[in-house]
Length: 225
Image 1: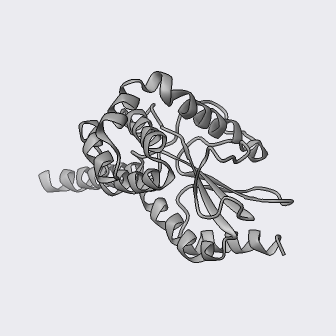
Image 2: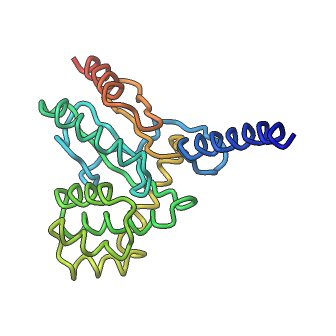
Image 3: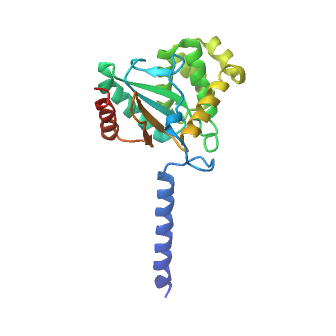
């Protein structure tokens, strides 16, 4: 009799475990209301943006990401691979913008502040080195940000001063990036938009595979000819 009761209980528990596993594996989104937005509202790209590749590229991939997001880590590798291949001709470039999901990632804002301080104190190349370090060492304890900045070649004093005064040095930029992400419809990370002059924006909502991104980039490039 006891064994007959154990079978349905085991089935229920097994189903619960599967459900939990599925929940954990699905990207978590920010609860900010309606998911409607307009990708044409992507803020114009300027020399103040973090650009990997040719700033005059015909196709620009604008990514809104969170350094504490595991999906962003994988997608970061994918986008770098795209730039390493598709960007060699100077026709494709990547733009990084901050979208810290503070609702679910307590360290997202400190990491975004650190990245912006690296850019402000050491320039674009150091910024990209530092972002790679943040993703490679995920999850990053904010206590280790100074050491990672030094690894990226940033002066400790300059970085520390910027970071301590983040409210007046970099927070406005982070807020502007986040607000723009929400305006275009982003509710989770990574969220990217492929921009091509004279063509409609192409949205990538999530961590697409290399092949999927390449297909969309090739589609965008075909409209530049």
